[in-house]
Length: 428
Image (cartoon, rainbow, N blue to C red; front, top):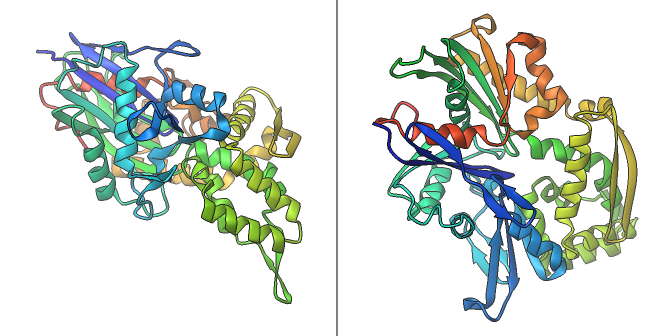
C-alpha cells in the first residue's frame, strides 16, 4: 500500500522537494520573489539584524538572493556549500565572527525551506528520501564523513530517512513514463557531481519494477565548467599568472590564491580580515598591483554572485549559440568578450574525458556493454551543454537518448521510491 513520503533533491546549485502520496508524486512549489517555482536555490545569506536573537539573520533559496541583491556589501552570500560535505579540510565557515559547521549551514537551509513551503512541510510524513551523489565532490572525498554530516543535517527533519543515489531517483521518475521493459543508463549532470546508474526496468506490475545494476560518478560537473570560463576570462585580470617580488627574485603568484574562485562555496569566506591583509601585502609586492587590487575589490564587494551569474549566462547561451558574449562589470573590473563554443569545448576537454571514463565505469560495474543499453536518460542542468550531450550521441546514437525534467526528475523519483514498502534495494 502506498504511503506518504518526501523526496528531497539537495543539489549543489538547486534543491527540489516532491511530495509522494497515493502512488504519485507532486513537486512542491515555492512562492518565491521571482514567481512560483519548484526550484529552491541552494544558497544562504547572512546579515546583521539587532531584532533577531543573536544579532545575525539568515535566509535561504531565492530569498537569500533577494537579500543579497538589496544589501550586497553588508551580507555574506554562500552558495554551492554542498561541495564541502565530504571534505575533511573543511571544518567550519566563519561568518561575521560566528562559526558554522556544514551541518549547521544545512539545518539553517532546511529550516528556511520549511518556512517558505506554505505550511506543506509543517506536518510532513516521517519517511524522507534524500538524494546523494554516487561520488562526492572534492579531490579526496570522504564518504563516511559526508554521511555523518548528512545525518546531523537531517536530524529532526524526519524519523525515517533514507539516502538514495541521485540518478536512481531520476531512473524511477523516468520508469513511470515507460510502458515496456528496458535497460537504461541514467546520466545526472548537476553543479558539483556527474553521476551514472544502469537500471533494468521491468514491465508494469513487476515487483520490483526497477533493479539497479551498477553505478559510477565523478566530482566534476557544472561548477567545474563554469570555472573553465572564469579561469580564461577573469582570473588573468585578477593576477593569475602574474609575478611578485620576493627580495631580489621574481616569483609567480601562488595559484592557491585563485583556487577559491573554483568553489563558489568558499569565495565569500575570503572576505575576512586575515585574508584581506595577506592580499594587501601581495598587492604591494606584485608586479601588477592593480590586478591584485581588482581581486580585493571583488572579494570586498561581495561580487561572487554577479560573477557567477555572468559566467552561467554565457554557458547557457553557448548551449544554443555558436558564439556568446561574456559581460561583467564590478569592483573596478570591466570585461567584455565573445566566447565561441569551440573555444569553450577545448577548455573543458579534460573534464569531459573524466566524465566519459565514469560512464565506462558504470557500464563495467553493471557488466553490460553499450549495445546492451536500450535508452539513455539525461537529466540535470549541465546535461543541456551540447558537448556533454555528445558524450552519448557519439557512443549510443541520437535515437536512444531522452531527456526532460532536468531540474526536477530526481526529487520526483525519490518521492515515488519513498512509497515503496521496502526501500532497501535503493538505499545507498
